[in-house]
Amino acid sequence: MDGTSSSGMTRRALLGAFAATTVAAAPTFANAAGFLRGAGDIRRIRMYSGRTGERLDMIYWIEGNYIKDAISEVNHFMRDWRTDGVKSMDLRTIDIMAASHNLLDVHEPYMLLSGYRSPQTNAMLRSRSRGVAKNSLHMRGQAADLRLSSRSVNQMAKAAIACQGGGVGRYSGSNFVHMDCGVVRNWGG
Picture (cartoon, rainbow, N blue to C red):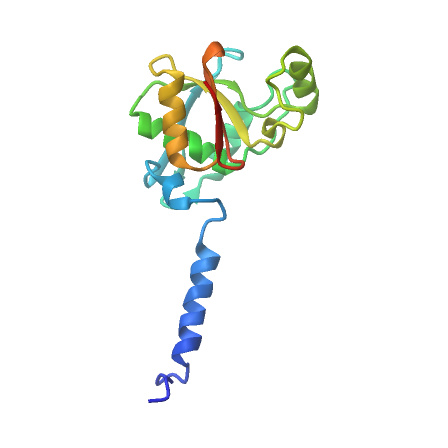
């Protein structure tokens, strides 16, 4: 047997094509299996902003497809409220938020404290606090600071850490959790 199928393709070529398809179809974020745990076939994000009074309850992903108009609304909601600047949020951050929310088994919306931050806003916050990074992922649309009144900072952080999708910061003194899609790490107490 020479390993050639009736179509003229060798077994090695067939396996190579399968491997290439698998790699091309694989998500680009780290540890995809852990990241998507709890996300489901329908992804929904629920938030409100104490700063603007706005509320968002949005299904933004259905069976493998992001809903463009829903993502636009999420981007607008997560804007820098101080400058009204909007940036496309990294979808991985939104997925981390949604998966963490599902793992917490809560219907209460997140209170969004900070999503996108303009460089001006980040500089102003940095001048007031040592806890603000100079090159914050908020400026890239890759981070969110969130609070839930029905869950502790530790409960929220544990859910986000379980997703293994990025950075998780506990800010117990200020009662919020930072979630981002950067390098997997965690800090704070």
